[in-house]
Image 1 (cartoon, rainbow, N blue to C red):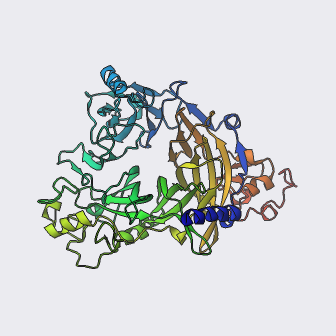
Image 2: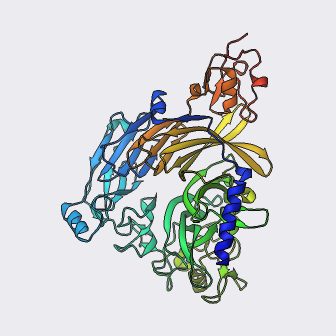
Image 3: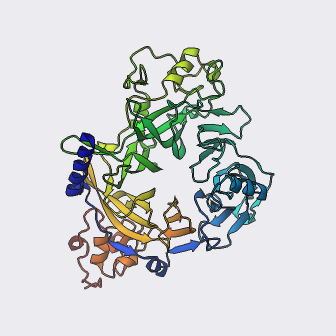
Length: 574
């Protein structure tokens, strides 16, 4: 009762403060679906009026194609215009599997179809694709041709088993990553959805997975994303990172709490010699924290990781990880964006391991001798030049990592606080992508955040001081007609285009609609949109190479008095 009372008080306190330091701002411009359509800066595409769960998007900027996976179909769309000559493959589950699925009591509409959940580039000419196959996962290869002009898109092999590559249940996330014609997947490997695994398959080597039914490794995980990230200059040291959230029992073994995690493995791991045979010998994980700390020291967590986006900076070592979180609290509901520096993530994985004496003991930093090479190190890398295989790891290294897969320290965001917080709104954020924009007065990060109401918020991050930032909502756009929740987003900085999917279909939308801010210089300047500038006649796309004399832009301050001298309120030169 005392704990519940404290939670209620905390909820009232947060409501009253309304997170003053992260006060929600109104968008400079709100565009309905029809308004957006009228700007001629968006396109909508779908195969049917029925919802088909367009959840998997893969961008191939080399061939100018966007590959899309949905129920019973795989598509290849032109990134310049998604509705122009789409290439489509119909790939349903077999009628026998659909009948078996229905007999097993699964949902005929949302379960007993072939929901495409894996699309990866296999080589220069082929894609590797997997679907749920009416609760009987299947995979195949698609010939997409060598060049986009070939207009080739066809299945070129018989279906093969997708077990260990794709979850049986299409409503359970599958994440995947292809490295050198090997597939790495985070999914549930069984029909009942009880055996979660990070698995390597489609390989000429032995298949490898996480330790089975070992809650120290994975505990009812929900997989969010997988990305390969370098660790130094030696390619053998690169790690494959999995982002997930999982349910963890408290120290008393009772209540289950949700923790967000970042886990990693070495792609060249082939398992141990005597222990952890055909299991990862390099698997480690750490907690990702995104929280608000109040004046009294109370820490309120946004604990459910929903999406991540990796943003490269001018210094490759300072890769930024944008994490999108929601709260599982019944007291207050909200979303937050936290930004992590890859250097801080490396520091945590190079720090102390978590150790627990028994099931009712708390985790403490491991104080004993750490075997060599350090557990989690990749074979053949800069730190292990003479150890070319994980089968050469000493037994004590393999035994240690089996019992100590978790790091003691958590990964905290830059400035130990969220970049963006939203509470008590009628929406939650679902997806995030980020663009780096060079404006007249510096570089800015522009966030595109998808919501469960089918809208996109375009937000610019403004430097406030050394320890904080401000954020400004430039636009809010209804990109789907029926407020369908956004399930996937991809970005092309090269094309200046955003690609968004939901149950309804896919929408392509431009980064900028400068003319919607108004017809006067002051309107354009007050918008503070780094993509837009006053060119002397109208609010138009900003180009760094344009004549300096004729452009007016002030993202940092948005001061029309300094920028619009020589123009009257209507924007005409005096």
